[in-house]
Length: 423
Ligand code: UDX
Image 1 (tube, rainbow, N blue to C red):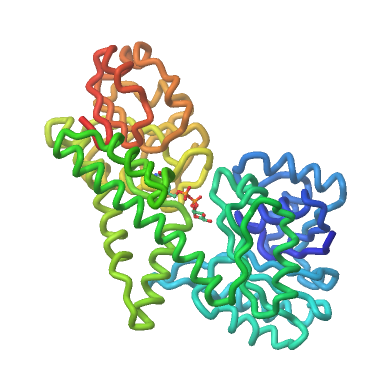
Image 2 (spheres, rainbow, N blue to C red):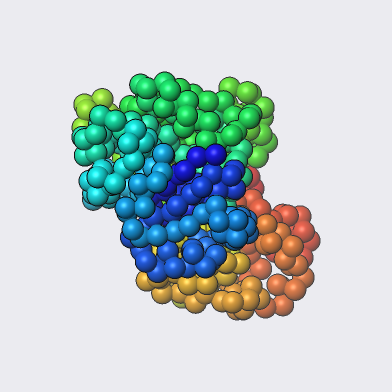
């Protein structure tokens, strides 16, 4: 049982804090956002994430977790995890200023021979800047990137595919790995810089994979083939893997766009450009444009004053996160072409700066609709009855960019059904 401090209680920080407390460690979460600290201390989660509030309340009750804005409280901790944001700068590079500011403030409070663990996604050699800022020979700096997915963050914390620990000090590295008590996970011990690159390379490879999947879906459609069969057969090859083969309206979220851009910038800077990243970004935009063209074609070639009903605003199911959501990008393209958009999402009830009507009930979203467009793969959309929906729409057309709905069920009720990757 260890004493752990978590600096930054956003998505990664809070999931890790609640995870470590549940494993029996004594955890203090530190954040400059006093309102968030007050909310967390009262057992409320500022993020929409499965089970996180249940686990938070349990650990608060057992006094295994506490929250504060007082940085000096790290003094009691053997391990100090940096879970601070590294947002995208205008040139696409990652902004490490929060990390560097925070380490300057931390240094004098750190316990003797404590270990600072970088969990944020950081560009290569940020660990060296952190070491310089801490400027203490007795404090080790370990790079331990996270691979949590929104919607399954706690499950991914408790059952990771692998734990990556980068540090030249093997003793410190082993201590950090042991904190996870993860029996099944493979532990990868490496150096700090390799650990930093593992995160960017993993996310970028998944984004490239998805860009290819969306391009194959478009290609298969142009040949009357069925991309779902094509992708399924591809995935049976262990070298390809069956996951992340679902076509969609493009990939998004807080991580993929930012990490692909950051790696692209860093590689460019080092004069070893990775052109595949440019291609993945360009391809992702095209995937969104393809969805818009499909909708426009289905409505006779013009979206002007057409009522477009959108199902799904979050960047993927089981999260309320609309940051860099492909749904929002597609909606903005629709609005630009003069469409009138009404949307429904099971969780997202408002999107800042988006001039659309977000309905509280799904039936309201289809009233007088010229077309229904599925953009987020919320499972509850599957149980919607076309025989009920048909009474409210103006036109019986469905464009399902996630291949979520049952084509035959909708067609049986007279709907024209347009999938993604097959006709
Ligand atoms: C990602 C990484 O998966 C995770 O390891 C890392 O720690 C953070 O970034 P997340 O941002 O939660 O996690 O999203 P993810 O589940 O990876 O999905 C990314 C995007 O790809 C979403 O827009 C999703 O809808 C899309 N996607 C995913 C597809 O279009 N098809 C698929 O088959 C899978």
